[in-house]
Amino acid sequence: DAKTTQPNSMESNEEEPVHLPCNHSTISGTDYIHWYRQLPSQGPEYVIHGLTSNVNNRMASLAIAEDRKSSTLILHRATLRDAAVYYCASGGGADGLTFGKGTHLIIQP
Amino acid sequence: GAVVSQHPSWVICKSGTSVKIECRSLDFQATTMFWYRQFPKQSLMLMATSNEGSKATYEQGVEKDKFLINHASLTLSTLTVTSAHPEDSSFYICSASGERGYNEQFFGPGTRLTVL
Image 1 (cartoon, one colour):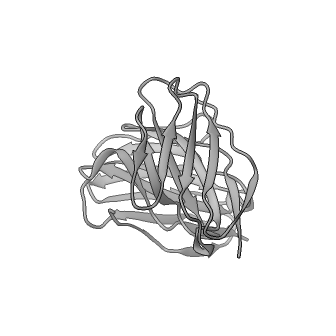
Image 2 (cartoon, one colour):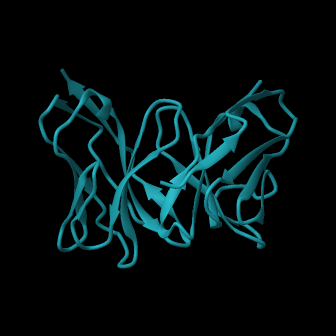
Image 3 (cartoon, one colour):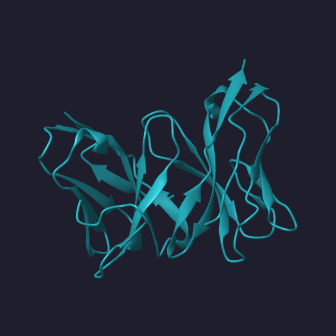
């Protein structure tokens, strides 16, 4: 199984960019890299996912290392509403997702 | 994005009883549904994978006779926790994938189970 590691917590200031790292050194060649975020007592909210190329959507950008052993979720301009636990996960398709332990993102006003 | 619902959102039961949790994909057909469990301040752990019309595949260490999964239609999967005990108290979350994106999983809001 892929092992996914993330920092326990990160802190940033409002309206500044945030870079959340994730290591997935044992990811298989067909596993996608997914990012979700979660608020207390709620289900995970989809943020972004990708396979090899960098991806952008209205919420964030995903930068994937060339060897796919790491990725970075980029929030371009953090707001207070972006405070949450951010999970990096690998898998997809017919397989379930293997989640990292999550990074608790704190946004300072 | 696609919408997945769960019912109930929370349930309290006595030890030894069984509890059924429903997971529905509201606006798409889910060929595959997944069940996860999340203990307080921990990450999500995959319990099982179910495909419509076939038996579920359980992760190592998850008792298939205790956690019964049924995926009878493309929009509904159920998880029944049989003979629940306090250690089964957890946040149970389902996800679904299918025609809305094979590699995407859409998560439900979760069900909080408390066993007294």
